[in-house]
Image (cartoon, rainbow, N blue to C red; front, side, top):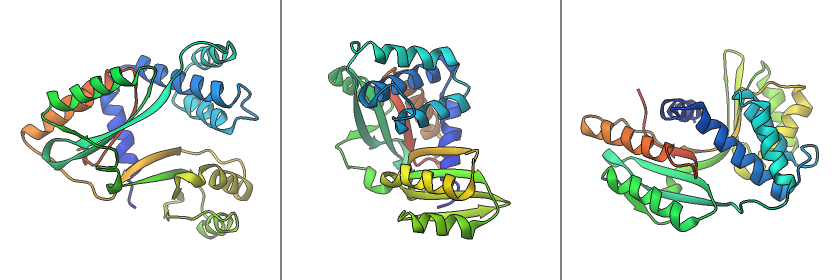
Length: 239
């Protein structure tokens, strides 16, 4: 599995040009989760995990509170998830996840990012079969056997476990996210997760060069400017 999750996080760091963008995306995601699953984090595990991730990414409390208060109002925007896939420069592949209140607008904006950078948007499933959709947990712990046993006892279909210098990385199916996290907390105590999220991880990563690098960076920058875009996953090994 390698450290593919780190490549994705470095990519996000390079393409996020303003903290305001990060705050906006967390705010929208928290709002959607609270509106659909309830505003109480105790009863809404998805919301609780989102809030934990937002705090780790230093999203201010007022941003989180505003999103939850907005959901309490009952009205407001009606966002729905949208996913787009396609091919980028140098044979690269990308998956773009969005939350939108206007699918036609969002599709047009994402398609423009593809066409303006000589990329090709594809149909659903065109590149996602070259990625694994995984729950990823990274935390400090020194007993890999205990971790594996806890996950197996919880009937989690573990994809991979890595242990490097006392830091364990667990990869499991995205559908086992909550089950896996609870099993880890029950077995290992109050863990401080360095990574705790669901991601698309490419089966293989590639390097691009020459003009393809500039085009790819422009492609990511254009997507990052779109308010509806929540996450961008790709298979480019960034230097």
